[in-house]
Length: 92
Image (cartoon, rainbow, N blue to C red; front, top):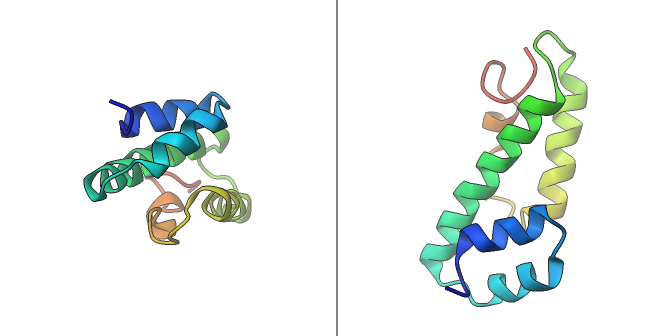
């Protein structure tokens, strides 16, 4: 399916931006909701891989803000509180 949110995320993560953008333009409302969930999950994985428990939260907050600025077009797809939360995504 051309509007598949999984394929769009794969395109984003592998740097295939033309295909990623093409898929985004064909999204229906349900595709956007699923893509937002996938994008938030990918951000959570990235935060967990990049930062360690006990680390100062400042770098985590900046990382999440930078990712939201680049990839969260609506400003509401990624919950910064969840992405930065100790024990969930962010450093403790």
